[in-house]
Image (tube, rainbow, N blue to C red; front, side, top):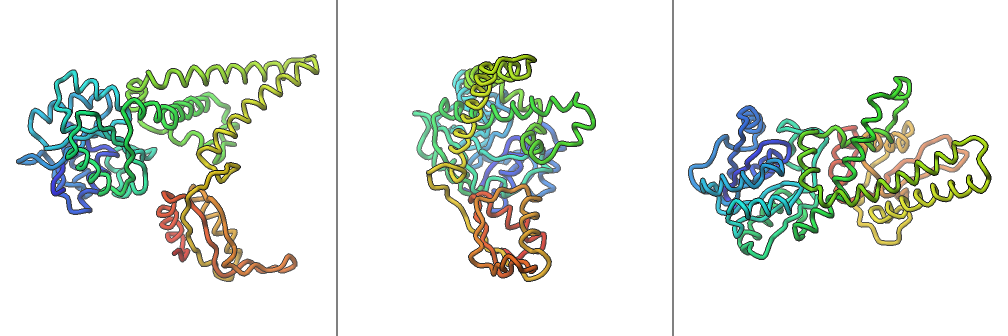
Length: 370
């Protein structure tokens, strides 16, 4: 791949452009907002404006409701030899592309599963996709050459390709992305009318649970609307669970309640929470599951003064990155009566996609990490 064009210079589009430019790909930046193009170009993401001849690949990085029209317009203008998009919904844009008469032999749907709570070109990062999944959704009419070009794009951005059919993709992201985002937003909305003293008590748990609620409301409304068919059944199931929880808590809060009613209500509530525990183990097997969970080991030198292990763990916590485990085999741990702290080195076990950001965060705080 020598040349590329990115249509839409928001967080995802600019991050792709930064990654491609860093790998030596001549990348052109196109957006209806000239200010965003100017910012993206100033950050080194590429060349403002369309190319003078067709590029190897065009990445359509616009909201789902505008994806098909953008593909149609740029195919008509001959922008590229191959086209892909980054919309977080796949079935609807593909159907709209067919309705608009797009050439779907040179088009392959894509969705990088990475992002930040901030949006726009200023929030973009060249390593945003490193070790993250990037779904590609080829269809029977997709040319092999188009798929190979899209796979090259994924590789240049440092991501891990996953091939799915468009409907399978939409059901998957409804479960693991769209539903959690909606729940985070609805939970965060409760804070608007909360008492000031209550809001001041909010800790990191609340922060983690609502982090993604800071996303662009207009963009997320577009995403949820485009995936309504896959999201609606999940919301129906969730509504039933919420009704069960509300009914159980109502019985438990009632005055003069019967012992049997209390037992039944507690049983219903416990069953709901237990299902949550079981679901959580499917994405974090190391917390009670049995499947092997891949991890990367980082070795950190502790030094021998001033509670280094406690400070290290505090710094990991401040970075808001999750540890899979901690190995003290490389450290000298004093006896129970000693006032000294562990020294030597400690091994931190983390998920592969956490290794790089945690290494950077710890090095920025003065730790020697390898």
